[in-house]
Image (cartoon, rainbow, N blue to C red; front, side, top):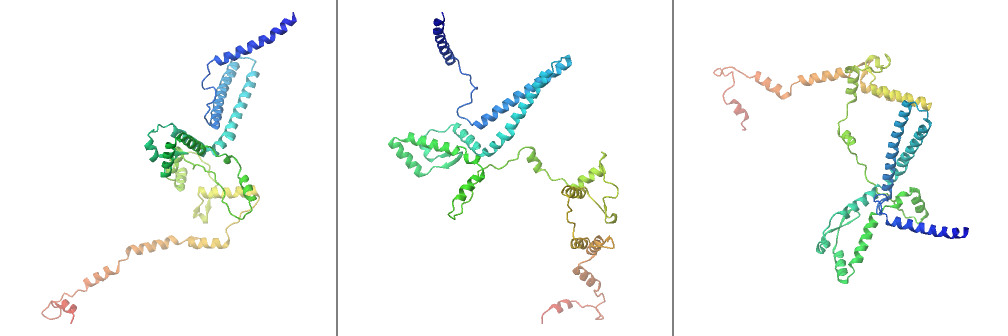
Amino acid sequence: MSRPLEKSIPTLLANLTQSLESAVEAAPAKAGVLPPAEDLSLLTTKNEIFLSYIQNLVFLIVVKLRHTSLQWNGDENLEETAKLNTEVVEKLAELRLYLEKGIKPLEGKLKYQIDKVIRAAEDASRPQATNGSAKIGSSKVKGGKPVRSTRRDADFSGSDASGGGSGNDSDDSEDMEDLYAAPNQNALLRAGTEDKKESQRKDGIYRPPKITPTSLPVTFGKEAKAERKPKKAAALDEFIATELSSAPMAEPSIGSTIRSGGRHTLSQREREQEAERRKYEEENFTRLPKPSKTDRAQSKRSHNTFGGEEWRNLGQGLDRIEKLTKRSSNSANLLARSRKREVQDGPRDSGQQPGSTFAKRRKT
């Protein structure tokens, strides 16, 4: 009885395996389950991690709601939900770590190559004219940049068309375009590897280091609007905050902001600088150098003070008043000459005779 059973089990297993394989082949393939063949693995991985993060986040919300409902109902089986909550939070932290420390740095290093691949894919998807005569003079796209076709390319295309080898050349050009758009694997290496290779060459010839092409940072939205806005005046903000605002605010102790015998008061910026200086000295157990005697003397000369008082504004005011009240020399001469004009009569020959001015100016 055992021998027929031993012979029938292998046959049953073989039939079962064959039926399962045929069923799998006959079943329709689900679209979207497997990643596409032609794609970037980095972007696909990023999308999958984002999707898993959102799923775990939704599951965490469900667990929180379930825990709240159990608390309201007075159920004692709260340890299981608490454990599940901890596992979901750990999974979210793990996915966030993958995104922040794994995907984001790689995407920053390969941003230039990814942009080239996307640009090449967009150019390939656009409808292009199939006219053979237009291909000779048109621009060819390589790596996302248009390149003018030369007469040499036209000669090559004409000779290839006559020889019947245009198909191979088109395949070669497509391969070259793929190579132009391929990501640079050297960007993933550290900078020290290239320096070691260059140091091994001791021929005395200077070779400049290779720089990885990167795209410039671009600001959008709020950052660009903030840059276009005019800068606010610190003095005006301080005046509004201290004089016009009714909100409570911390004030320094009375007398701590008075300088130069009450003629100067420390502003908010100066107080912040002093606090920063004090904090640095306390943290580093050192004293920063204070202004020397020469610097203090120069500052006093620039302020034009004497006896504790400032005399600069007084001199400026006198100079300004004198400049405004002073008359020009030409106007003063004209006014004096008009007042000194002679008005005596002519018959007694004591006044100015007609034509005397012309006679004086006449050249003899």
